[in-house]
Image (cartoon, rainbow, N blue to C red; front, side, top):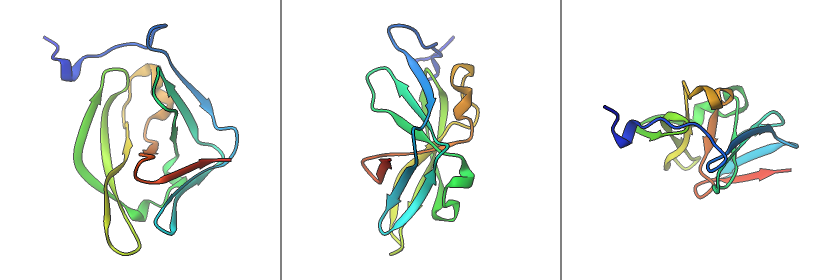
Length: 126
């Protein structure tokens, strides 16, 4: 039996999901440092939500990310793992980034990539 926390849904006309290459460089900043910068980010558009940029890990400052124990479930993408961001002053932005290691097939392009919460970091697409 499926519980609501593990419900699996497919994108549809009533809940569309599209993924496209970024039109230019996308940069993520926190504090005075750059967390990610890439011209090959993927932009995921899901239904009525704000677009989300997903970055290759090679384009991220992985030394500033610390694995969190937090996990969440999206019925359209699967299980997400989270990361804290360590700022230059030693403080943490808790659960500021996430990844879908093994997302559902309809969004498999984002597998292993990282995304960041715009309310916790600055994200600029130029």
